[in-house]
Image (cartoon, rainbow, N blue to C red):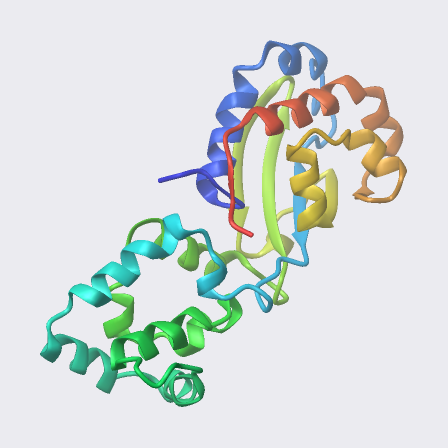
Length: 237
């Protein structure tokens, strides 16, 4: 699977790259020894209401369109007849040209479904057609997004090693020594080269925990940012 950001796969690649980075290992020597060095990264304001299935990269949605086109007439009729009332309402209001057939109208209605609404709109026959990266990412959004637009990642950091990095369903279930929170756009800026310490000091990112300790390990924080930027990523939004 492509390492889409944010996703479990990207986070695992980041963990692996962090553990292979000599600069991070050297600069984070002693981090988390005799104190809780675990971090919670909080991505806020994910644009799930504003982003529809049709807005996602073509790499994610092309296979779904192709599979719908490849259905036989009877198969398509069964897919159409078992749709949820929520999708039926979208289908009835879908804009279309006079020459559009049922499948084109169906695709247009589907492409207009906001990511936030997918769990309420989807039905088993449609879910059978959603596969690969799109299936995995939609499942991750449904599992890990809380409070409508927030995702939490937990990193276990100790003495130059990232022992674990994972998305979490219930952030309150784990205590951490530090929490770094920012909107999704700010995190993507970090991946593009923004300085994490400058982002904290300018209040673009909110840090909970000892600021003094983080500044003392500023070179380690910079190395973490550098590794994030070097980790291959395709942006979901």
